[in-house]
Length: 202
Image (cartoon, rainbow, N blue to C red):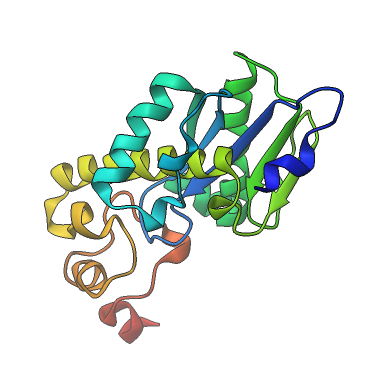
């Protein structure tokens, strides 16, 4: 796996992986996790979080939280509207990393994607890293599980929008709810498509 590219012969590098969940939805926060795995971690339970069933993700989440050094951070829908989703995703990963380094300072941060957050240690972006690097896989699982949990809480508060089902993504059900009820309090207004009534006015 690609993590071996960042290990030296003299000393095994301490690798931290980070990934986010929630770049594509119309509502809710973007959530990121950062993870340092121990040498004896059962990496066979890991994969890109999107390719795991909910049950397997949650089982892996429990193991990661029991055995690894980890942290989770988020950027709210309001911050996303203010700084845009790319910057918000990088900020969430930076926040998660900063929490982890208070516990253990890694040698390198590996993040999923093609952009890197501004952090105090060397950082590399790996395209599709959530399917290649165990630490990024673990971070993707924690971020996905946490964000889904937050959206289920949002569903309990605003049941008309169906957040527990679609997690804020732009499904037909979600868009129809926005058309009918208007944006919920956690909609990302910078992502917001004008309703038919608004289209008539503008």
